[in-house]
Picture 1 (cartoon, helix red, strand yellow):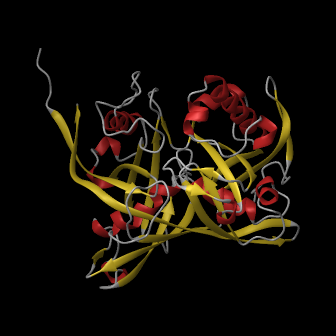
Picture 2: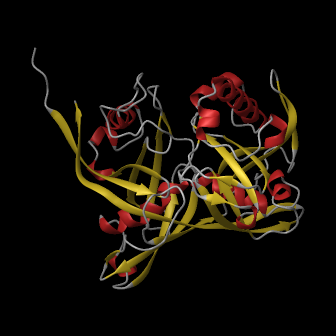
Length: 389
């Protein structure tokens, strides 16, 4: 039996923030994959190596975690006053499924770099030395993101001394601004409340802040589910009962947020919403052995992504944290001490992260102009990715 040769597609393997993924220019994809649909999804699944019942991604580019099973498609923007359109696909590890329902805030830090290096940005917008302002249209959620990309001698500056907890080595700093991070219709709080009572059969009833900023996120108090907020990955990811509990909370929260109509639909929407639990600042030792002290942080936050506790913090969830912290009365705001907060530094499993947000009460509704944080990004490999036809 004759077998077809492998298909080779130009691609770049990049780290952005505490995630990494395979980046494509839209026009480099096969024609059938340049539009949304089954062919595109099948190609991206095979690139990553999913579905993999072994959970290793041995036969693909994925890293068998939610942070490393990611794909990005970029193109010159179709939107006025934007430079590049950014489409993100979160690839399931063990299912034949690509989730297009949300953004990846960490990989956003790499979008501007890729766009500049691959000719997707008007050269007049890239200084010989200084900072390029890249206007990104996030196509999954229809939002504007501004990336400040350092440039040296006309090229993206990737090396530097900026340290990001959750990333082993320093790199150049990339500041990212998420403009108007809530839904365009103003439904930052889908239920209309900054705190709700969430009833989860088999788990319990507890307070929750359900916010749509950066990415739909359900915040609960760590103490209400018998946690401290200082847990590391092994404390939760090795506990099947705990993971099932968090998935049940996520499903019922998704229904209450109006994202799905029935809890059974949650399985087909793995990327959103996120579940996170918060607690006041506390001392702990991070996964790298670094001591995090109460003097270093305003609160502690732990978040789950694709059914597992994240090793650091998703960028989009950090936007949700910063936004919720800026609004008095949310569980995040209260855990950070309450009151008016323009920025918080929170502790996560790998260390700490600072995120700021500008919030205002307009006609009785909270609005957030933008959330800001610093990340870093760099190219890991450039060339062609090969997959069987």
